[in-house]
Image 1 (cartoon, rainbow, N blue to C red):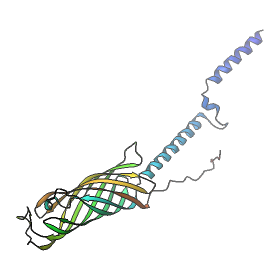
Image 2 (cartoon, rainbow, N blue to C red; image 1 turned 90 degrees about the horizontal axis):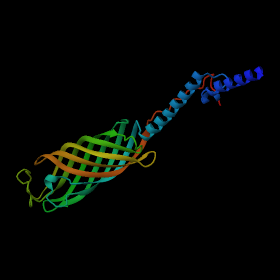
Image 3 (cartoon, rainbow, N blue to C red; image 1 turned 90 degrees about the vertical axis):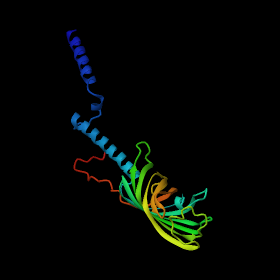
Length: 253
């Protein structure tokens, strides 16, 4: 009877001790210790984090060269436009250079269709050349969307036939009536925009820009333009993930 009681006591103590072992240890191999087991879990978590970071970096390209094309509407020049409707369509072509994921530089060439600003100007032709920097923000919960702030330099090539009729800035614009006039205005631009990734290399962009220019009649806000278009990545210099060569401790399973 005493032996039976001792066997029952030892059995209960053994079950209690085994139950106190963390469940994770049960699945350990024969050559594993708790320290090695937890190290493997930490390594697996680190690999998972690196994969997530790599996907995020792929969405938000770090280094790239892109091209873009789109359209915009522009007021041409508030100082020279006395019409009620002041906006005209234009086509835009761009070349981007992105050194990192927080800033990109671009050259923008925009050509406005020929218009008449009656009765003062005829056959008006305008071309804009902009050198801009985009300071980029990546919202945490929107992997496909990038918001950016625009700061840059701008030039406007103005060409048209001046009639001199109803020119309210005649005192500042020293041009003879019924003559052709051509000039270049220089200034700066500020604005905001966004990009939305459609597919891997193709983005949609939209933006609003304010041009501040030195014109014939003074310095000030000369244009507010609205643009939209597409951007395509020609070259992506995203670094390839580091490949760790398996060591002698590498296991397939």
